[in-house]
Structure formats: C-alpha cells, structure tokens
Length: 338
Ligand code: EPU
Image (cartoon, rainbow, N blue to C red; front, side, top):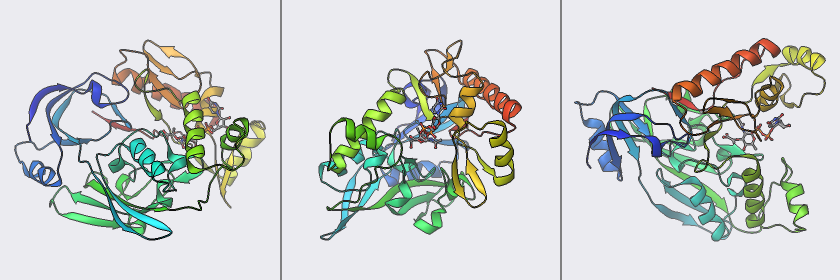
C-alpha cells in the first residue's frame, strides 16, 4: 500500500475531468482498507471506485482511496440457482459477461452499465425494467469510523429508484467491500418487454432468446444511445427522472399532452428528464467543451477539456431552464464532489 502525492484523477473518472488528488492510494485487500482508514494524518478521505458516477468539480485536498479489491466466489449452488460473492472492485459489466458465459441469469438487462460492483447497491443500478435489487441478497460494508465489517441484508439497504440507505442515513459512513447475489440457472425468466429490447430481438429474427441474446440486445441499444466514456467523457444519466404527485401531473399533462410519462403508483408519476431537457432546447448543445449528448439529452458529455466547474454550471443551467419551463425540479443522479 503506497500513498502517492499529486496524482491526476483524469483516468479515474469516466467524465475524463482533470483534477488533482493531493494524496492517492490504491487498495486491493479489505485489510489494507482497514489500515488506511485508521490513518489519522489524513482526516479528509474520499473513496473513488469505478469513477463512473461522479463529477469532480475541484482539485481534491484529500486522501483519495481507489478501491480495487477483486474476486468472484461461488458460495452455494443447487439445480436452480447459484449464490455469488463479488468483491467491490470487480467491473460491473465484466461480471455480467462472466455470469452469462456460465448461463447464470438475472443480470443480462444490466449489461454495459459502467462502474464497479461495490457501487452498484448505492444507487440500486437499473436498466430495461430490471434493478440490482432483483438479484441482490446482501452486501458487506466497512464502517469508516470503526473499521468493522457490517452485513446489510436486502431490506437493510432500503432500495428505491436509484436510491438506497447508502445515499441517505448511511451516506459517508460505509464503504461497500463485497456484494452477494443470487442468480438463476435455466430455464430462465426473461424481461424483454421494456424499452427497445423486443424490437431489437425481432430485428435479429430471434424468436426464442437466451440470456446472451438479451444481453447482446441491451448492449446494441445502449451503444446506439449512450456514448462510450473512452471516446467521449460522460457519466451515464446525469439527472434522475423526476417523480411528481398526481396533482402536479394533472396540470403538467394539460399543458404538455404529448409528454411521455410512467405511472409509478396511485399518486405519483415519473417524467423522463431527457424529454424535459430536450424540450428546453439543450439536446446536442455545447458550451465550450461541456455539452449535452446528441442522442440522449439526459447525458452530459465532456468534449475534451471541460472542467468539473463547467459541467456543473451546465447542469445548473439545465435545472433552471426545466424549472422555469415546467415548474419541475430535476436532481443530479451523479455524485458531485470537490
Ligand atoms: N427521451 C427524449 N429525449 C432524449 C432521450 C429520451 O425525449 O434525448 C424520452 C424518450 O422518448 C423516452 C423517455 O425519454 O420516452 C425515456 O428515455 P429512455 O428510455 O432512453 O430512458 P431514460 O429514462 O432516459 C433510464 C435510466 C438509464 C437506463 C434507461 C433504460 C435513469 C435516470 N436513467 O433512462 O440509466 O439505461 O432508463 O432502462 O433512470 C444511468 O443511470 O446512467 C442510465 C443510463
């Protein structure tokens, strides 16, 4: 374990933002994590995992802990299912591909989501009608204050839409070190009705899809709509889709009869933030090197040398415009640090 000074974080965040960490350490074991957390000479510690859901807005005068603990273990297995323990530093998409190659079902709709396994519970990652919580059993997390490991069951995690205890009461208190998942063996139950999966499969003339076919379809759809962070810096959806009450929705629909929406309960509706942003004229717009993606208005992009501040200003400009035009508050989904 080596603590380095003045390290550029450009390659550690998928926005590709240039920012310096005054101190930086790469952690590959749970024991090393415990030791580094005990160090009192670095009061300000920030954990950076896959760097795919952060906007770094300034140089960080902190010890940046890059979590890179690897390993996948099969815990139990029977004729119907398999339970896995996956360490936090495993890349999420690599895990999905690993499970598909062994015909373990459950994660195929979550193909190509950037980031690492350890951060997947924080926002209960989701796509195409499936969320992490559907396969999640429990996770282990280190209490930053006591360095003790604690197990969080599924109900302990209080999962919601892009939400969990780790974004609320547990915020800044824990570092997730591993995640336990339960996956299914064939015959698989597939979820293909959401979004464009069905039409993608039809186009490929696949009548009886496998989990690999569903994964390939999701990959194809995502590649078309979402920019590859290695080519164009981005952090996936920058904002959450706002959830509004029935009353607010009634007025909204009256003024915007053509707007897409999803009813999520008796009394609440979700409006795609991408649609709101597009209506405000931001889709494909560029302000210096900070911009809005041309194919998906929910994704902010770094065309090269945008600073975190420039992207933050653009995000605020968008929030203000949406508020002014629709009276709806949209909130960032990415974590803003700095
Ligand atoms: N839309 C627009 N303009 C756009 C893009 C979309 O008007 O530029 C409209 C579409 O017409 C569609 C609606 O917005 O009716 C929803 O779009 P889409 O199906 O692409 O999904 P999303 O709500 O924008 C969410 C997740 C994505 C996930 C997709 C697919 C959030 C914040 N985002 O996006 O997750 O991949 O559904 O399930 O919930 C991420 O979290 O980083 C992420 C990419």
